[in-house]
Every structure is written in C-alpha cells, then in structure tokens.
Image 1 (cartoon, one colour):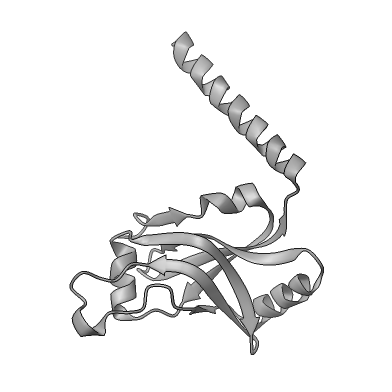
Image 2 (cartoon, helix red, strand yellow):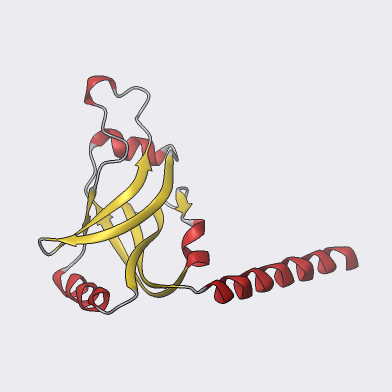
Length: 151
C-alpha cells in the first residue's frame, strides 16, 4: 500500500514559488483514511491556517466512503495537521511576513501506512513568473517530443 497513493496539487507549483517543504501527519477518521487509500481526494483551492498554535488545512475534499453508512465523514471539513512545535514556530514566523502562505502540495501514504500531507511555505508568483513557467514547460515538452522522433 505504501507508495501507491500520491495525489498532487498541480496548481500549487504554478501559482506559488515553493520555498520550504514539511511533511505532516493528518488527524483523520476511519472512513477518511479508507477514501484516501482508494484515491478519492481532490485539492479545491486548499490552504493552511494557524489557529491556537495548531495548523489546520482547509479546502481538501475527501469523498465519502461508499460503505461508510451513518459513520461517514463530512467531505470538506477542516483537518488538523500534526507537526512538532519547532516546525510550527518556524512556519508561524514566516507567514507573519507579507506575501507568505502555507500551501498543501501532495497527500501520500508513508511506509508505515499513515496518511501524510506535504505542505510548503510559499510566496505567490506574479503574472510574468507564471508565463515564464509555461515557457519552460513548453520547452521541456518540445525537447521530449524531439527525443522520441530521433529514436
């Protein structure tokens, strides 16, 4: 099971300049972990907030488990992230600076079978930075096409 689930927030690297990456555990219910293991997670404009010296993630949609019955979870609820105090303090200091935010990058299952969320300290990109990213992506795609033709 480990390594199979790797759901990425594709918009994050396009919209933001990712500076510092952290791996955090997530507080989940039983039906939520089952939905994650079946790959039913989507990132809908996710972001993280700090409330009472704890980090919470908002905007991650974990679909209800088909066989959950009355114990099913709410798909878009806020979920607490598990980080140590030193990491939380570092993040808290950085987001007090203007222009910084905390963005979820991907959700995955580690080798112990626990669901983890990778978050990053990020700064928003300007419009010209986004255009530059698109140019690099197009150039990389063109290079790979040329390599396939030469084979």
